[in-house]
Image (cartoon, rainbow, N blue to C red; front, side, top):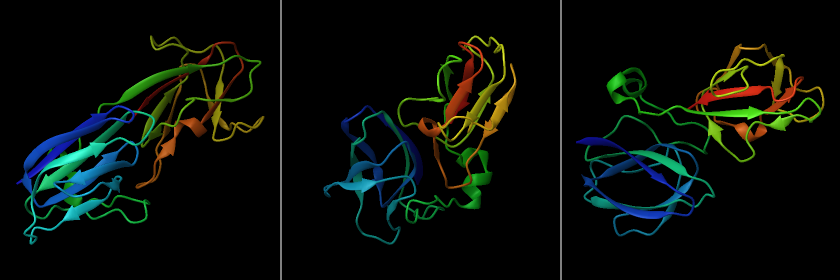
Length: 209
């Protein structure tokens, strides 16, 4: 038996959840590191790619205690099983290695709900981060629009991973789009992506997962 589960915790929230009696748990995705207790064990820090247990182990667990230690909401996706599951432990927080059956079969993929936001600026302002706080992403489509209703910008806008003057090399025309997709096993932070506009209140609409 293998079951894919998800929990969303607000900043600082702790919660205990019951799960089917299992021998193995693996975290497949998480917005940020978190603490978790397995059964009667003590809390340990977890992150995407970490796993615990073996199908040959006699030890089982039927509940988990989660604590979000970050200052923002944390979405945690995890798998529990009483038999071996086909992905390996993340090594040194560099990449989560997924088995081909998980990455290629739709039924085994993790469900994710895309999110979106709008950022605008003024022509006189220096380049600004598209988000004021840390938000990681794995895939983003960026549109040259100044409203969530889809209003096109007046002029081109520029993006780059630097706030220094004239260091935003990605140019997006009004109504145009640009895709950002970090390499496999890597996540990028919207807080380091900077926007510079030439016309007041132009901006970008970003849809991401």
